[in-house]
Image 1 (tube, helix red, strand yellow):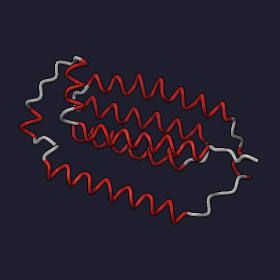
Image 2 (image 1 turned 135 degrees about the horizontal axis):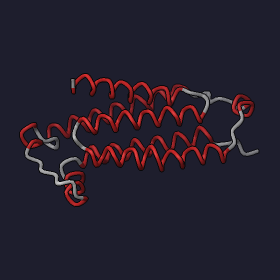
Image 3 (image 1 turned 90 degrees about the horizontal axis):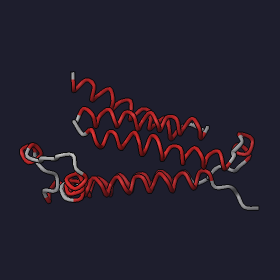
Length: 171
């Protein structure tokens, strides 16, 4: 049952993330992103990371999405304005950047596995988290530092993508 729920929450998160980046309406994209945050929180609950799941809902689905929606509404993008803007004519560079990112991520992951950064199942089962911020911080910046840094880069890429997509032409 747990595996089935994990797959359902994972598929929900993946599908809603894909829908978030493929929608033309920025508000619809933000709503799909909220659903993705809930899918991730469901997986955290299944992994018995209740604190992380609560933070996922409170911080990301709550505060961060309110900030995103505030910026979207502040930009006041109209459909006519979006359609009148010229589209980027360099799709090759977008595809090349995506391939480069996947290659670098794969190399980093393989190097991390070779270096023994990821703990094995026995080491993971001995991790004793008492739920305190200190224990979570030590685990996050010790054992799981690579995953934390990759998440930071993904968020940076998402923010840069949002800025580029919503940038108005200065005339």
